[in-house]
Image 1: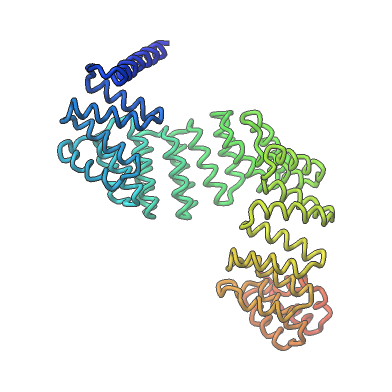
Image 2: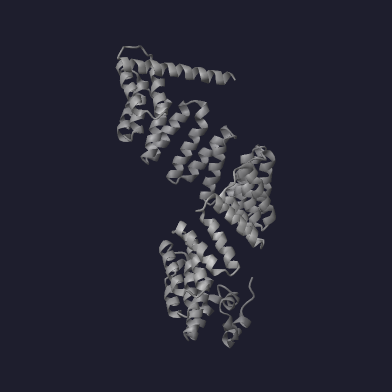
Amino acid sequence: MHDEELNDQDAREMAGIVERYEAMVTSDAPAFFDLIELESLIEHYLQHGKHRHARQVLKFANGLYPESLSLQLREAQMMAGSGNLKLAIPRLRNLLAFEPSNDEIHLTLATLYSQLDKHQEAIHHYRQALDLGDAAYRGDLYIDIALEYENIGHWDHAVEVLNEALLENPKNETALHELGFCLDSMGRSKEAIAAFNDFVNRHPYSCPGWYNLGNALQRNGQFAQAIDAYEYALVIDENFSPALLQKASALTMVEDYERALECYRESMLMDAPQANIYTLMGECKERLGDLSDADDYYYCALELDGDFADAHVGLGVVAEMREDWTGSLKHFEKAMELEPENVEYHILLGGILKKIGMHDEAGLIYSNALRLSPENLEVFLEASENFQTDERFEEALQLLDAVPPVSSADPLVICRRFISMYSLGRTKQAYQILDEALDRTPDLCSTLAGLFPGIEQDAEFSLRVLNAPNTP
């Protein structure tokens, strides 16, 4: 109540200053304002988007207090705010020569250098502000410095800064989340697990600590342990919905769809229903084989957001499972219309077109997918299968010749090449590439038989199956 009274009092005082100033402007009668009042007035107009009024007050204030460094700082900040960064910086550097210990000048310079992508200069001034500024803002400054290091790819330095922030204030949630992001970006999942394990050992009642440990474990494929970590987070704060959603994701990965559904339902008691949550619930139902319920959830998602592409994909998948090709095409086409550069949607649509014998149309979809993602192996394999299903084996070979070198020895590429060569009567060449690949992939024959069942009747193939070494 006391704080509310102070806020009301401040608001009344500010209203009085505004009234006196605007009365002075209207009547052109002189009035006295001290420096603090004028600075407050400038801030008031800026907060209300009245930039022209703020500039007029600044001009008036400079006339009264021409030596005021705080007004010069405000002028430089307003200059930067209007886009004149390169004019503002010299002003600020000049002010810094007079007030080298002014943390606000350092902070403003850091912000401008960051906008100009001069990240090292930004880091220098953020560090100065960190050393000079109010302790209440130190946590934010650590984050600012870490983000600058991330911008120039100095992930190790960012991690060091974030660890400093957490040593100073273990409750700095942003630092915890950012640390997880940095270690994930560096591909250091085991280091992340160790770091967050250490953190929760020291701070066992930190909900964000357990949450980030769960995320690190989940990224490393340790889903059962991740679920445990999310449950600890929820014991500490039962309303922390991100932990509930991540727990659902981990449960989905271990195929415990019923428990995942319970988590999603519970999350909707905490937060407003969202299209993506309904879609995830639909996917759980789909994997449980409850196709009608899956449809219902996907349509719930579309009621909230008619342009939510993943819900259309879900409906397309369910229609495909029912062999409703028309319905599947409709939803996959809608998803692609909404997200025309999503390669996964191209693959889904191409797959349906291929199934119903529309090979030319599927080929166009795959060609566009390769334009969007020229090294996507899955598209090469789907497109080559499309040609082979249409008995266009030479075209399939030409396409497979264009597979990026890094993927050319992939077992599925070898199988597709074999199928085309064998089907074109180049059996000697086909078996040659198969024999070369068998040394690397002993179980290749079973993969090939799954893709090309007729080959099992070939005596040469049967001989290779008999002589294949046992797989490890």
